[in-house]
Length: 317
Image (cartoon, rainbow, N blue to C red; front, side):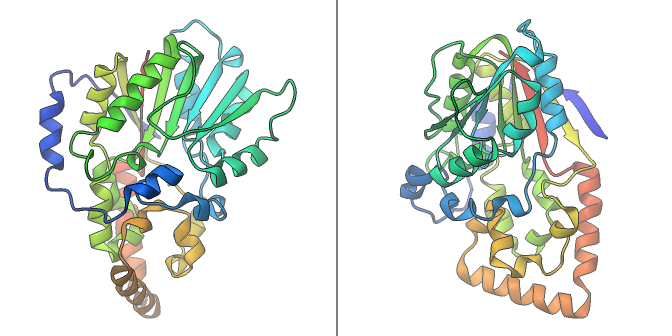
């Protein structure tokens, strides 16, 4: 089940959503890390080794539907698609059987290596290719693709200096418009700031939760940025029946966060400080022992059923 709505906030303007970000806390991460592996706060060379233990291509059917209903006139099975920030290739692998060609782009060599392995590598005559490069640049010719997707990525490309204006996100959207053919579909899978409250483990690190929330572009701002980049008919779909992680039993495991590898599968932990993490893990240990953690999980799961874990915005080039 999911909700669907048309987003048409053409009058929002940059000033409207810049003010919402003016009091954002610093993430305390150096820009050098973003230059090295594409994220302003996560080290994905390390995360790549454990990422697939709990992550999957949730909502892939929404992306397939968006691409199939695009206005480019190209049938889905003949489309050449771009995966912007492909990570380990979960979404690329889910789309590969349905389209003619998949091009995978990521800034992190470790993630891209996992993606290459998952999709069978680049062979003569194959239907997939791989490129390493940092966003917001898209190193492709104009009008190269029939559709493009960007899944839970854009919050990584801003830093403290740009997050008040979301200028790198704006630049990425203009690049996406450039490399897409007229009428092509763009799908963005994104965590809305309010959806942070549905992630149960962040209840134990409130400082981290608010810091991570500050990295997330508000949905009306993101829709406006898409319109400003030249996209039309921005739609929002919010799945209510899936979590960003799978298997669900692993995500809902009360002691999961006590495992460093479990924590590495989601970048949300990366914005926390060492002392905050120490307190959080102690609280989780205590609540596991007392059973109180089950009430925390149940409350957040009820919230997830109301607002979802992520939402999809898609539009036509």
